[in-house]
Length: 234
Image 1: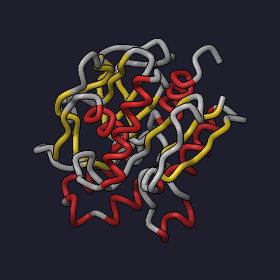
Image 2 (image 1 turned 30 degrees about the vertical axis):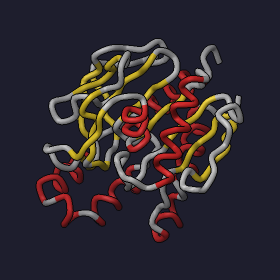
Image 3 (image 1 turned 90 degrees about the vertical axis):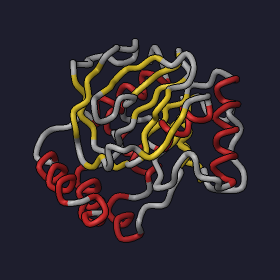
Image 4 (image 1 turned 180 degrees about the vertical axis):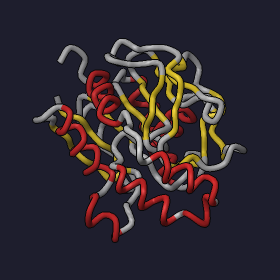
């Protein structure tokens, strides 16, 4: 089993020293949860993308960019996602990846009137997919986003929802599994993002994020769900 990670952004160089790139965060997290997990990391912003057959399952990472941006690499990635869906390759989408998959498969994404989500916040689990072993009634992941999925794609099943983020997580059969939060983030990295964006997100959101960092999050649980989804039966 080889997991392909499509890395959709570059981490700020000062933070990358301690935390690596997004692909590195996923690889470290997967191996923390399931030692020996094999990953291949690809630059999704490059001029070409790997064949959907090159790996057994895929992860599309977060990004500071928006799924509705007109950048050529985003269009290429959207077309790649459509091909993976047709080929029935399992793909997990995280934050930007969640939004890109939704839009590429017929949903709608835009900047939310609710404003910024930063740090951990509680979301209700409304349905438990087969790979979500150990799921409770709520899900708490680290976050950093303004955009949200406003309309899910056809045939999508809602898995987690809140008043702040109604379409927080969804699935389409055994091919797509997405979430708005960031299970790959460490608290230190998310805290550094909150500090860096303090003026941008505003004091209310900043204070909520800082207070939230004092409480446990479900990062490893969700990473295990991704691995269960990408490699059922293992």
